[in-house]
Amino acid sequence: MKIISFLVLAVCFLATLALGAQNQQMVNFDFLVAQGEFQLSTLLGIAFGAGFAIGWLICGMLYLKTRFSRNRLSKKVAKQQQELNQLRAEPVKE
Picture 1 (spheres, one colour):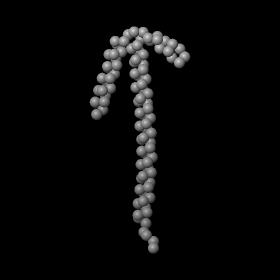
Picture 2 (cartoon, helix red, strand yellow):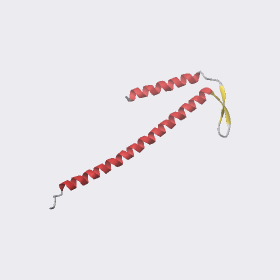
Picture 3 (cartoon, one colour):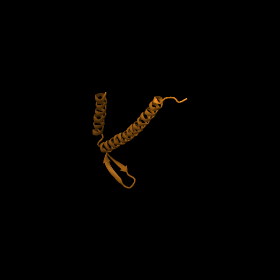
Picture 4 (cartoon, helix red, strand yellow):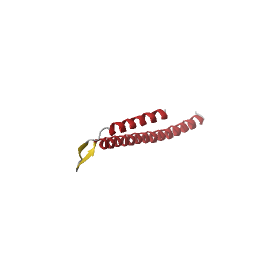
């Protein structure tokens, strides 16, 4: 499965490069503070790379949050299981 996902990612990257190579015209890009003139292919590459990085960052943060939550809950379940086993082991006093 990892190989297939890597191949899909590589194909997307190569398609982006191929499309970007065809767009050599200059465009004006207004920042918040300044203005610049860039090749369209460069601007597309920067936008694609930034989107990819932000997506990985968000997915990584959600993955870590889930792992920490799972570990915390596993410890809680183990503790409760131990307490339950202790209660079952105690003789009933009547």
